[in-house]
Length: 160
Image (tube, rainbow, N blue to C red; front, top):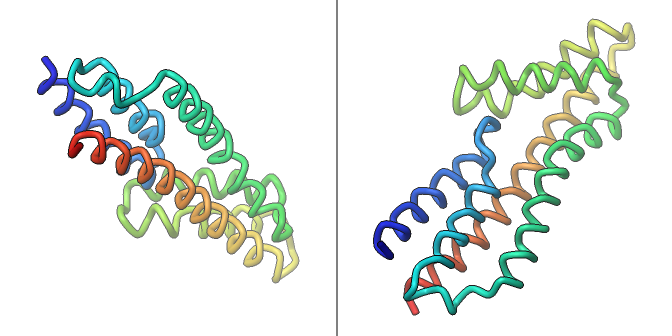
């Protein structure tokens, strides 16, 4: 049973890392699930404390919240409006059909189009699009760091 849980945990880690880039997969929660599965392995159960799981559950929840706030903040900081935010959101969804570049360029062009439809100013749409792109990249980076730390801990436990 331990081997099965470890294999499922490794699959969760891989899906978690992919979920940092693909918006439809919740990356950090899936990575955290790998650690929870490892906690139920008799051989590794003592390597993970309940306190560690609770702290990292809080970090994962914070990451999920920030995943929505950071791109909006980036768009607003650069002068975008709700049209730019909606455009960036639609751009992410459309970008899924044009992986891997679409996931990066989708929010940019979506915010650009959304702001262009709303604003007659020539500079605002481009600034909002850059803000959406930077917000998306920062949010992705935060998720990758969290999943990377969980993955490193998982591997360290397996090796020891």
